[in-house]
Every structure is written in C-alpha cells, then in structure tokens.
Length: 263
Ligand code: NAD
Image (cartoon, rainbow, N blue to C red; front, side, top):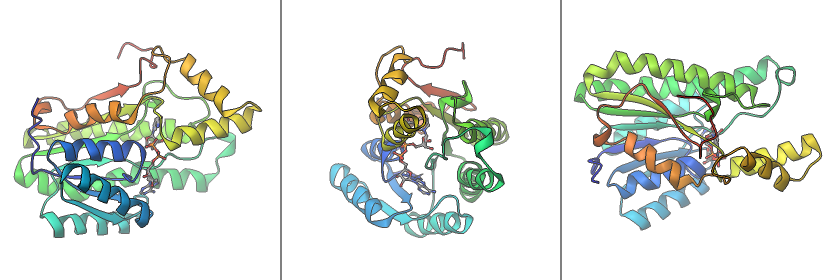
C-alpha cells in the first residue's frame, strides 16, 4: 500500500530511541522528510545519521526538551527554516516517574504536566496554523494504554494522558473540515528502554527480579509477549498517512490484547 506521504515533512519528538525512533524510521521509509528532537544531541544525531543512511530521507535533528516551551518554539522554527512547513506532527515524550498519589508532590505534578500535556499543546499550537492554511495535516499523539485502563503505580501517566486524549478528541472536531486529522495511539508494553526501566523500578519496589516483573506483565498480555517498536510504528505511520484521511478523533491501542474493554 502506498501511504501517499512521499515528500511530506514529519516532526517527531522524543525520537532518538524507542517508539519515537521507530515511528520516524517508518515515516522515512514511506518517503517523508523528518525533523526529530531529543534532549541529548549526540544520540539524536546518530539516530538521524542511521535513518538517512537506511532510507535516503532528509533528516534534521534538533536537540530540544519538549517540556520547555522555549525549546519547542526553537524546534518548530528550525523545522520551518529547513523545510518551510510541517505536515505531520507526532507528539512523544519520555515517560513520567512511577509512583502512587502519596509519592507525588506539587512539583512532581507540575513537571509531569509540562512534559506530557503542555508539550502537546505548544507543539500543536506551533504547527496548526500552517496545516490549516494548506488544508492538510496529521497530528498523532503517543499516549498509553493507561487511557483505556489505568496502570497501577503510574498515577501521573494515567492522569495526564487522559488530559491529552480529551484535548485531541475536542481538537479533532474543530479542525476536521480543514483536512487535518487528530488521533492518539496507545502503546501497550513494548520492548524499549522505558519498559526495562519500569521493570527495574517494579523489581526494587517489590523485592523481585526485573525478569519476574516482565514475566508478570507478559502473563497479562493475551499474546504472551512484549510488543516490538516496529509493530507500533506500522499503525502510527498509517494514521499519519493520506490513506487514513477519514480517521480522526480516535484512540487505538497496540497492545497484544492487554486492554480488556470493548473499545
Ligand atoms: P524510551 O525511554 O525508550 O525513549 C524515550 C525517548 O524520548 C528517548 O529518545 C529520549 O531521549 C526522549 N526524551 C525523553 N524525555 C524527553 C524530553 N523531555 N524532551 C525530548 N525528548 C525526550 O521510551 P519509549 O518506550 O519509547 O516511550 C515513549 C513514550 O511512550 C513514553 O512517554 C512512555 O511513557 C510511553 N509509553 C511507553 C510504553 C512502552 O511499553 N514502551 C507503554 C506505554 C506508554
């Protein structure tokens, strides 16, 4: 299937590793040009070089922290200076710390809000006018299965990803007539450094090994295995494509069947 995004410009945040990188690789393989960000320039530039070598895509890497609105503004300005427009926005960020309600003070809530919610608002605010002027755009927010079934011990993630979902679902209707779709994609347990980190945290908390924590998760997944980043990226690329032109306002999980609800 030709996804119809050859020559489109895609901005993917938090993309030096994990899910963001996998989505960037898939979009480049489909012919899109890329603007990628992460906080650490060395890792980011290596990722950009790898993707250029593998796909021949034009790839710009800009070191930026999405939790910092000034960095977001600089990132989008760099994208516009290089390519003149952003057609596809994929919002992603590192995960917030694990913990219960009692373990998070006001500063922790504030930091997590800037990381997970404000970043999406600012990125969207910066690219939306151009999309509206051209009558074409794709906004895809990477959230989590937590929006369909909260995950124990991930209070900040459970709360703030729901806020992103509410914003996306509302915005989707506001911009639908301009040829812009707004969707969310929900990773389940997927093999990245984030999952290794969560397994280590669960192990310390519960006095078990990281392998035992991972085995407990896989026992709750009907497919009995973690997802692979490229399995997640396949749906992400489709939702960013011309072929997904009539899909908006959705939240779709890529989770091996983990969410037990009907929708
Ligand atoms: P990861 O830790 O493997 O990769 C995160 C990437 O984000 C890295 O490139 C890192 O450099 C970058 N990054 C982190 N903080 C940033 C910031 N403030 N500004 C810019 N870049 C930043 O994580 P992942 O597994 O790819 O997860 C991506 C997102 O999906 C996270 O929010 C995570 O909580 C969420 N998620 C992941 C899973 C999973 O199983 N992997 C499941 C549900 C939700």
